Length: 142
Image (cartoon, rainbow, N blue to C red; front, side, top):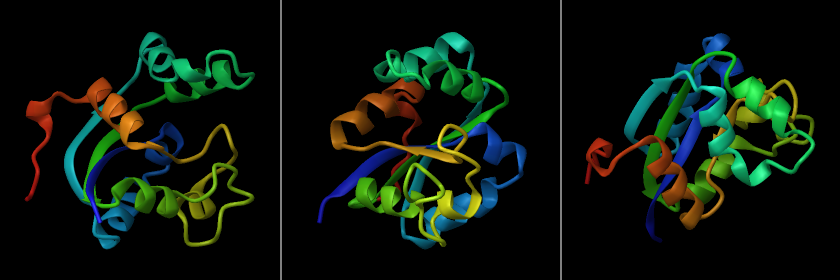
């Protein structure tokens, strides 16, 4: 198994509902280490740039609006197969299809207002991590 890094974002709705600790506990209980963390309030320009890949999709404007309505928590998680493990912990994007016990299954409101974001591949993770953090910000426990 490979040690990987992945980006996780605790989205505005979860921050507003004070779910930060509950979500972080799930990452830690799964054996994922937090090697960087930051609370930020994205501007529309920053959110638009981060979600640029979705610009042509019908939900893009609503997603940018949601991601800028209050602060988010950005995390870099590290561990064995961190990307797949994080995605399993998150559950399906549509909370009505997410299994109970997953973050989205337990806490998300809708597809566009779900509670967390996670990188979907090593290349995506590297790009997304670099969007929010410099190499100097990453404090590996290894």
